[in-house]
Image (cartoon, rainbow, N blue to C red; front, side, top):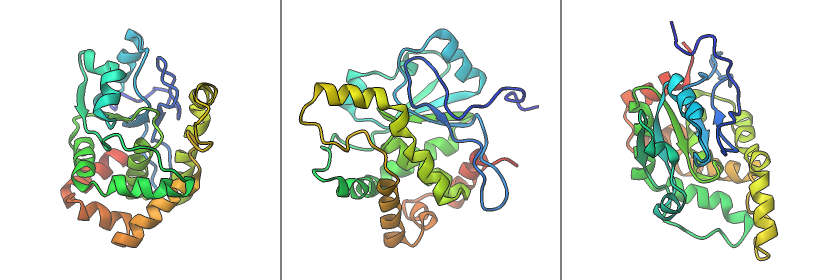
Length: 239
């Protein structure tokens, strides 16, 4: 019996001070299946967690954590799960602290360039595939780097592009308190900071498909073997 049976599954999970922690379960796929609940979580940085919060993750068998942030961000705002027993934490930075693009039209290109760090993306996805249980992958706000990884995973699972874009888009709603605070404290902040318009991710995925043919071809091009792809799909999809 699956230890998650009988557990109420929710898209957004309220843990500690996390605003944007969400489950990738429940999305329909092209072959008539559904993505699995309680196995892959995408989120913002784990902060303000109680013992009960950590215990809930362990009860869901979410024991692997992938931190996609820069070294500076991880040092300034530590992932609290690294200090708790039972979690296997991996630090796999997807960027080295690049500045925001000067123009909103360049956000999708910025995502594409992050995905061009093939060794890093392969490491992120292999870590997810090889995890003994469920996985939480996160960046700072759970929007950009996390959104790109979620899009790759959901595409591999066969989730419709519109659902993938919607999954990305909702981040700006959940992190709205942070956006408001940034707008109030930084007069020079570009108006688009904190937004997750579907056009941003759509542009990235179209660039990826233009360069590689398809997202699956991209995943193979970065060095993911067929066994790894199958392990990822087994985590993603209900039987």
